[in-house]
Image (cartoon, rainbow, N blue to C red; front, side, top):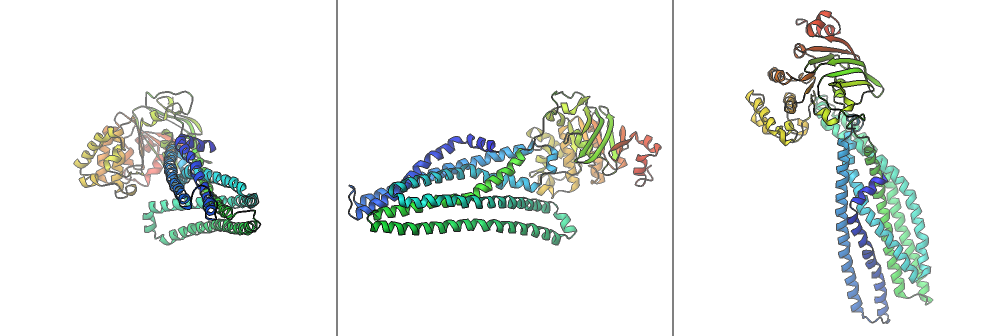
Length: 568
């Protein structure tokens, strides 16, 4: 994690360096100002320094003006560097997310990812730029002022020298409490964000089942937990700030009392006491500033841990084995394949072969492992045991791009992105725009889409489009991609007869020379395939052609007989 932070800081080292170089200039001017106060008071009491009161006042104003100019430059440079660092971290995190294996997202909640990409990145970016610069500036100010105080009056300076370790101890103690509280509150905040996301996505279910009260109760519980933890966190922060204020007032009272006695003893000038008091007020500002930044630093530290927990996730390997091979043919073969989601075994020694150009249907009851086979062919997950071969080549030896560019996949659940229908068909690829337009024209000719549908913007997840319209887009994407292997996962169960007729016609021509796997629950979809693979409880229990399996009166016959008595 430290290495990552240093790398980000190094990329913008020149901007940070410029900001750092301005620190001694800004602080040097600030330190001179109280000394000018002393000189003005001394001149007022009759001491001569070669300048009158008006001249010294103009010098003081000039220092104040120049100081503000350099402070502005430092603030601008720091803010610019911070924005660039935030952009860099967010881009790297997003790129890393896109490179994670498919299975990783079954563990990560959408709310967690959103928080890490937004507020967590902002916290870390601020820490690497503004907080870092301000911390160094404040430390330099504290050290410089201590040196000046020791030069003016050692006895008065010792109050500060003794007091600072007390503040450091309190800071360390309360900092640990705040860090724990920040970790808990950020965790609850992620849960709330995930809950918001789920509520929006499942709003139709909430309304149809009248679960508004239950949903509100669940949200209220999360919100109450967040409020309680936030209150615990706020108990320590105001306590610390109050302690710093009390300590400052107590210290000033001690300095005025002791300094007054020294003036009476003629061992201290009044101008020196004013300078000391001004310096003490100046040194308390960076100390209070550091205490305020404690919250930001701890917040950034917690955020960086959460960001790094994602960056530590292993990215999807391009080639699983050490020996890369190219796919030249497109037969598909499973050899003793076993696979599990965690401890739950899904596929148990699956064996089958699909020749190049064959059209094969996979059927079986819910949970038999049909969709899992589709995911494994795409290498969304790695198998536990066995081999998956395409064209006689183990897919572990094939690059990710080569494998997935050879596969066209249509799923039952279709996601539409914000934009137009053409954007969703081409997936923002300019080279596919013309094919997307041609497909839209086909839909218009068959009266499946209207000009209004094609021109309207896609809403949240495509909720302003019907399921059938979404399915047409899903098929259109695959038709445009025109890959050598076609995988259809129960994607025709929610479309009307007219749309189904169009898709059957298009599919007949599209998959004529392709290797195809069709997962379906309707006989009309699978009657004309070359072979049917029947699955049950993660195993292949029957293989054959349609009539052969009907005559056999085995699992396939039992599966369909209650639904289609007249057809069997």
